[in-house]
Length: 431
Image (tube, rainbow, N blue to C red; front, side, top):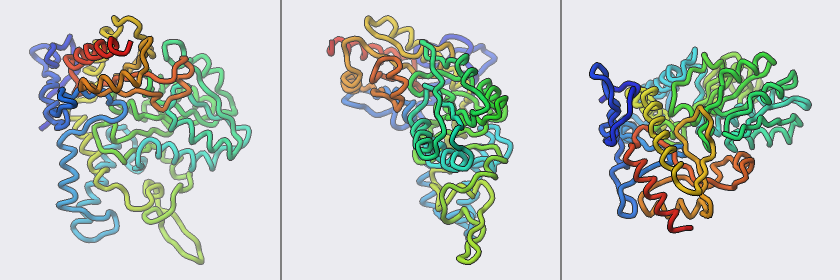
């Protein structure tokens, strides 16, 4: 059932219900939590408090049910079958493509390419667009905030082709250094590769402004939206993104599926990345191969049909809650957690940019992040520790690892309080 929600307008109660005016509905987080079976379990005899959402969000029952329904009722390969099951599977699969189009406000469903996740989507751009368009002397700008998946593929191609990678630095608070970004842009810049939201710090980058500046220099922009899509409305037309990628398992969907959006003219001009079934028009030993039109040109082989359909259901679930409402609730959770952990002696928060998503990354003086992560798990609290696939960024701040608590629609203020209480207890044990 859809949930009636609106953006919160005042402080939430400790039960997790956002209080609003009588004329407005409420963001009923306790009702919402009932959609997630995993939240009812215990870990080490304690109620689970899941704060590792930047790595993978949990999945509502409505999405889980897709797999049973698909495999028990209409499991079939898609597009070319003439039988009923194939027709039903194709309709559901392509229905998700149209839902993603609306989710991103793309112009055309043909601009939506299904991949295994953000990493594969970025690699598709690197190996198709990058290999066809980059040459020695060209420059690609990458921010210090990037996940390894938006660094390593460019490094591999640069070593092969000989173009230059330049790094956009960050300010002390974790915000991108926009003045330096402007100075790095030049006629040699061919592409800017930047995340919308930092997975390690939660910094929200001004991607619309960055796109405008890149386009003024004749460059394209690729945006890693893995950490933005779960928390805010994304409008690729308003941003004027040339490429935009996100993953299913960050938006309450399954693993193994993701999306690449690209402008139609770019996708049509790009060569295929992988060859095989589905992505061809004709194949001949004598005349060679001609390729299918987009999006199928980039979707070789049998796709993850059930996962794609489940992704559509996950986006439907998010939209039934209200993406703006989810972001507003998570903002309250982040504010509450930031204020609470800020009172702990020796704790340092990394990433205090004015615009942040629901990520709280920190280190504790005299305590190793791995020790904190292992011990707090014994108290039922799941957080992420390590370098978060952002080693250059953490080394810039003089650390090898942080603890990271990240929030989702189903987390509550009470969970934040219990997390802080558990953290204080663990710190007392390891110091």
